[in-house]
Length: 223
Image (cartoon, rainbow, N blue to C red; front, side, top):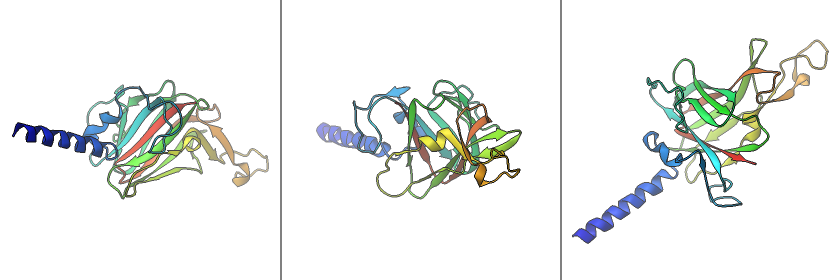
């Protein structure tokens, strides 16, 4: 009987571990965040499409109810956002780290990351199939909100989820917000690309429009 119990326990543990690799629940997210930088082989890519090697891991978790706990300075490699609706992730320049994990309150979440150029960002949607999110990089210019014409649509479909490179979309803003050609009109002819934390814009943030996506996993790989 003891042998049967041992076999059953081992099978149960294996099944639970296998499920959490692609279906990340809110209470098991730390499985994907054991350290600031996780080693995944030496070179090349992994089976899920992400590069192998050291990376910073961040999980954006959609929750059905707002969080009430104070999560300032709570660097747990996860940010909680509404499961349905829009919220902001305020961005500041610095080392990778979660400054405010609660994106369900009035002041939004906060995340720090270096200026672009020395890393790339990979993303994959996880959780129950059917949800999606739209992430857009935004900032302000002379008190007006400016959002990029490009965004990231992350849709969870059936089967295994693969990483895609979203570096450009999350580290730059393609928009027209000032008359750069001097014709007196601000239109598509004035479209320009502004990199994250460029002095031309202020108060950078990611606008996260969630439509039922449980988890968006981001990985930041140093180049």
